[in-house]
Image 1 (spheres, one colour):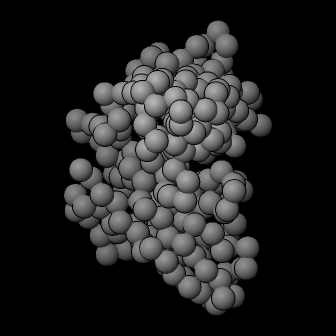
Image 2: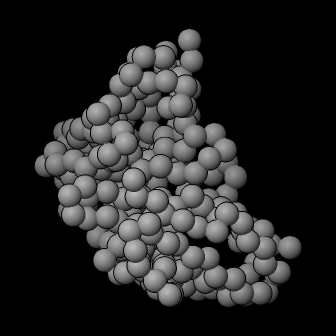
Length: 112
Length: 118
């Protein structure tokens, strides 16, 4: 059973910078896992922010960036805004025999 | 603009079959994309269920594979989910999404709550 692990919760001050990470039970996360990051606010559908490690959608605010960091996928928010308070999920692709996507458990980001 | 809309019964009896449809507009389901289903139990995280290509090729979450069938209807530009032998643990908001190259989902439906209860 493949497990994708994220920090359960993080707190950041408005205007600050925070990095969320995403680890795989199978080993180091590489670009071949096509890391995705999604944001979800209460009562809303998920909104995709980052795909293939660091690519942004047209609607992704510039303050969000994706990378690989120390064997994990990472999402960095620079100049955090109050509206960034949300749950953030990473999503990794596992090829090979199963060809599946697996979500992390999510990180609840509090802006305080 | 691409839009996805889930539809189906909001209440399913235990041991029954959950059936949902995702109608796609703004894109052809026969385009070079995969189409997926994701669910979220109340108060919990997201779970990937499976995906389908317009040709009918599918991939499923191994933990659900024995109970899941995803199909596509190109004439109606929609795809569907069937989950059999449901229990209360299958109560969740079900989302459909479009996958593009390297993306596990760019456009998402608004989600539909399915409750399993007698």
